[in-house]
Image 1 (cartoon, rainbow, N blue to C red):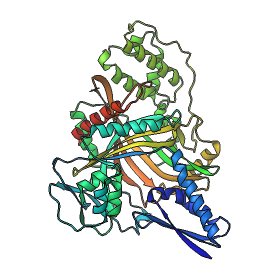
Image 2 (spheres, rainbow, N blue to C red; image 1 turned 60 degrees about the horizontal axis):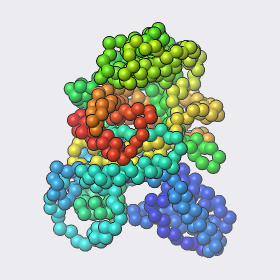
Image 3 (cartoon, helix red, strand yellow; image 1 turned 135 degrees about the vertical axis):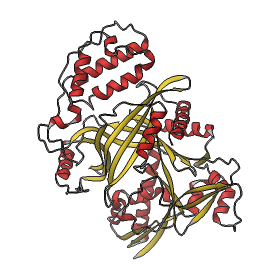
Image 4 (cartoon, helix red, strand yellow; image 1 turned 180 degrees about the vertical axis):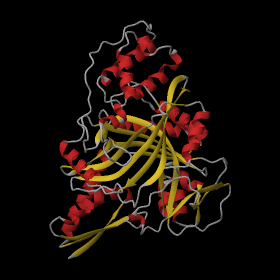
Length: 534
């Protein structure tokens, strides 16, 4: 038996390991292979150890790994930038310190982390002068400065436009995916072993970025889950800033299940939104489902009784048209209304909005529709959870994260996904429903069934929609802020955890095309509003 050791770049490790270790297991199945081990403990290079009957077999394993790594060329590159925010423009050193008990975010408590001795740190402050230190490998890499860093100064608009431009060029490789750009407050956490405090050099971050951190044994992750105490603070801020809460009396609620489904030789990810009550039960009666409320039925009757577009928006001035359209959409959109005629009522609403926005007279006739039924797919006392919406094949195109000593940072993401028009296959629905039936008294679900693997469950117990008209590049746009009260559980987490999550988004017309300058303008605007709220 012979043993060969191969160096693997850490950025390719996920391709070697595969989902739940399937990649390593498949390498072990190659004829003549006795064992394959993969050591990921070193931050700069990972070691693949192959034990086989001869050198040729070891080489076969390495060739298979290289094939997987080569597949990277056909995937969508993810553009990542970390924006350093400091009040001191002359800063030279960024100081990190251990997270205190007053950290503003909720970090999951996972069984898998019980053996992880990494310490969680946050930015403490920026200093103009650093401490003297001996020459080490990270200093050597700083001097090279040949690779483009993923750390930039927050005011570098040209770097932002370049990042968005690259992301949009990558988007052309995707077919007909829905694009969404949002910004969320949270906190950037630094993980490192053996540190109580440490310092990061300006030159190292701006010249080498992640490579600089890897050489110091540090990695980062962003936590968007805020402490529940922030709910009232953000509510008060939004009110003082002139936002309107469009569903204060009847906030939305739903449960999102993130899962992987095995199809052939690959896993396909799904995000499934379900209508279930606070105890993760399907609604016992259709009348309990908020989407079948009397308020929503009355909204349909009102729209379908209108004869002119002016009656659809009675007394609404043109500058308030968009806000009113969003208010009525909350009641009429087929995802949120299961009464008969909801689809056609929404079509009438959309048509009237478009015509009035173009300047058509209020006396113009409404869109002619023949109201058709849209009934709930579940019967009374049905057990299976009701599917509201399904998204699949989500791809992150661009991520922007601020690095600061503030209590909260922000992360902006541009993502693409498919709306699953066929919904889940009946087989997957049956598996999901069986999982639901087998949950215990604490709401724990069997996370794996062979075909289906549940990664996490996120229950939004209250979702408040806030809107405000703003100006972006001289145009009137609608800014939307979702404030969500959550309880959630990831696959390996010990218990449910409560948190709030906040998403900021600037609405755009369906046919509005995105470009790098527009996304940069939106990012600047969202950052300004996030600062006001925090």
